[in-house]
Image (cartoon, rainbow, N blue to C red):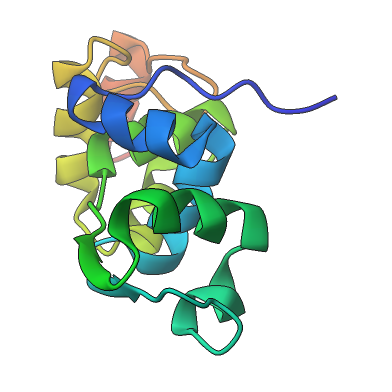
Length: 137
């Protein structure tokens, strides 16, 4: 069974359409996010050919052949994807080289998670929090 990726953020819809699927857009973003990549007329000897498949390169060439393309980082969308894969906040932060607070903030802004939830979505109870302060505990 293939993974169902969440809808892209509005700023990424055009990229997903250009790439032909959310999965293809994610592959491009994970390989080249945050950089400008040259899309050559012939893809055999390009840096793109080393990281993404030929079908995706062909789609990019229809629009960008012989030109540079800026690939977004897509942090908010990737956070949603990785959280959907049950990655921990810490692992997401490390993968995206950002702070855990930044991950929490992105999730809150997307309305997807309480900032105190653990990887399973469970919130610590007040008693669990107070136990941390108990010197006898």
